[in-house]
Image 1 (tube, rainbow, N blue to C red):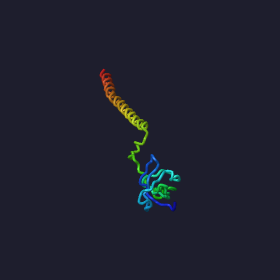
Image 2: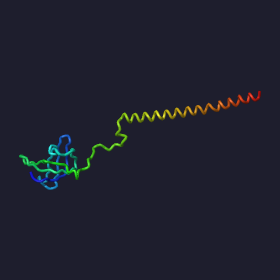
Image 3: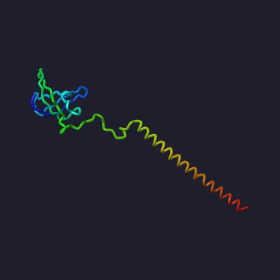
Image 4: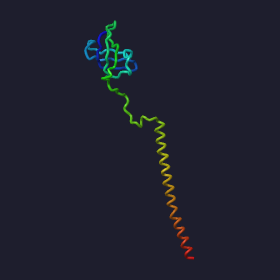
Length: 143
């Protein structure tokens, strides 16, 4: 063990909790350094590819090295890349809310159409009423 080194996380397996760091300086004969999630105990989040990792090296009995006492450099952290495309805000809403919104629009449309139809019927009956009153007034004035 020694001083802290810095490197970039180049591979990370979320399901298995390990990955590999490419150190800024050649420390492992140019090979990437293994890192396990357990060496990131102090971190508040899981790492993402592109994160800058501060770490110390531990040489194991088999000659391989691994990162220990690791931390994500929060000053230079990578922007998380999502695997899913960004959805429009309406697509993030629960399905029942979308269905309710559509149902509300249809009900509003039916109410507007019903009101317009009643207004049409009212206006269509008025000329008959006016002509009936006119004929009554004409017959009473004739007689």
